[in-house]
Image (cartoon, rainbow, N blue to C red):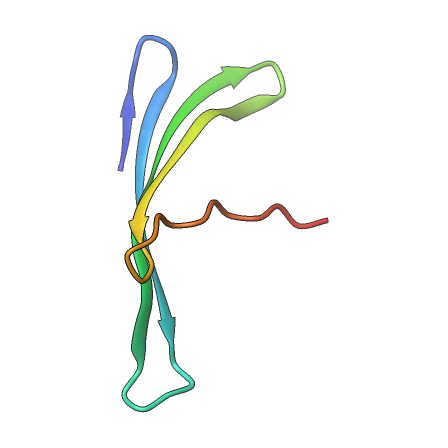
Amino acid sequence: MITGTQEGAKAAIYLLTINVGVNPPAILAAGRYDDTLVKTPQGWRFKTRMVQGDRDGQPAAPPTRPQ
């Protein structure tokens, strides 16, 4: 969900990681990204990203950036 703000926008994205290699499929992690977005001359950019979630009782790891 994206909501406009005076600064730009806020976004909330839910995530679910599922292992489909087992039967039945198993949920590995669940969480949510809370983003603050700003518009720059180069387009929309992330200002902040907070990750909330659970993975075996541990906070969800932030996503990795491809090299």
